[in-house]
Length: 225
Image (cartoon, rainbow, N blue to C red; front, top):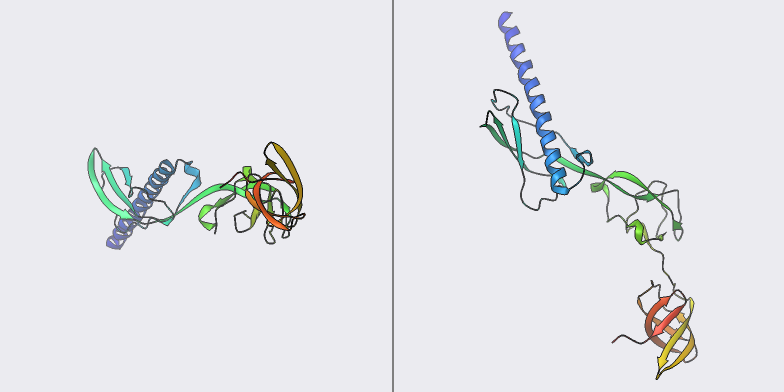
């Protein structure tokens, strides 16, 4: 009975030590990733490290974490761990926990249908769950390219920038010839944003003219070779 009790006590002590060490390693990995990515440690989620062996450190060790240069920390990542106590190395091993980075991204303020102008809010998500780059809210407004649910993260697969002029829209073609300004009615042949080089139909001559969209209703012809 005494022998059995001794075995149980040793086992319990080993498990507790492994748990404490695992928590210390996880925290060190979290801080390492946060420093490398220049993000708050609270935005780093670290999965189980799965320590196979508990190193024989005489006291709570300090932890040094290293990764390969340029590591992206996407999902499973290999970390090299060194443990030291009293300035002496007492453990060296590698672990490969799952890493998830959280972040604030634009999300739909409500439900939208294709073609709707989308209002945005920000919400925290696991960035690896995104299937395309999140949009930049500063470059809006955006319109839905497919039905969108409320709170759904907004990526370039869900929305596109709202065009300044759309295909088929009537516009004014302006051209300067020898100091004389000539204007004609035209029609957009494709969606475009301000500053885009566009092709427009000249309704008076039934020809295609190229130029720069300078405002939602004006194309400055020529000027680009």
